[in-house]
Image 1 (cartoon, rainbow, N blue to C red):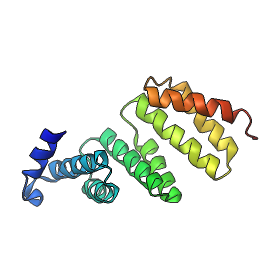
Image 2: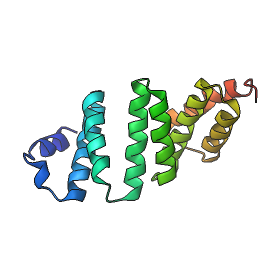
Image 3: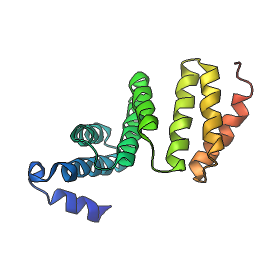
Image 4: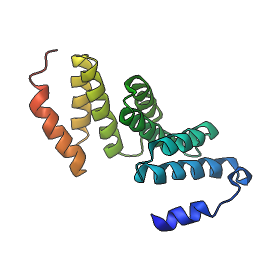
Length: 151
């Protein structure tokens, strides 16, 4: 990570970069800020990257998912739901990201007390059979709870 950050910091004039490269530059700056738990800088850079337009559509979905996760961190649940729905619509690069998006939507729906939608998102996440330990653990935890939820 230090090497990547060093390369990113060596770019003095990002506005001189071609538009798709500049978009990726800001997205990477946002990712580095996320790793450092600097959510304000991460959000600012991710928004710049999204506003410029992503060269690859899967990357756009992944960036929107990250923006949704940032909004959840800031407890802006309405904005989080909007970003995650957009990410699902745009398409995500792999089943792990899709499962994470569906699980996040499940928890947002449970907060809104929309239990039928929450169960639907949970089923979609589980059907993807993710292998990432964090996501598998989340599914196991939710499985215990979701059977007792009405709807």
